[in-house]
Amino acid sequence: MARFMLVSDARRAFSVLSREIDMQMDHIARMPAQKVYKVTELARALHIRDEQEQELKTLFGEFVTRQEFLSNVELPPRFR
Image (cartoon, rainbow, N blue to C red):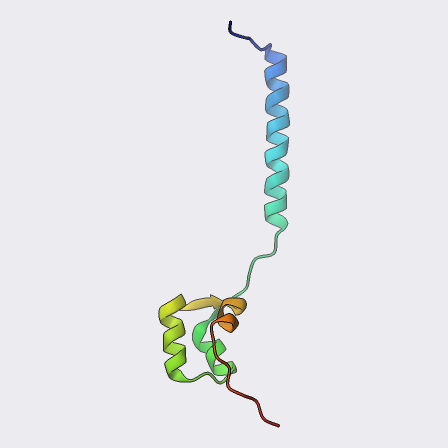
């Protein structure tokens, strides 16, 4: 047995769904975007060797987030 919806019920259901979608889109729009850096610029700023810079370029390409970069690089020791 098929159940039929009234037009007003269908409009109300559509209204509720569209409001939920709008709320989700607002939430996504408010999320901060991750900043992306050039691998060469980060490598030069942190004094990374050229060999390691090339490895990072093959791993990530030309651009990388700071977190990805720092988690995959071996930083040189700092002396006072």
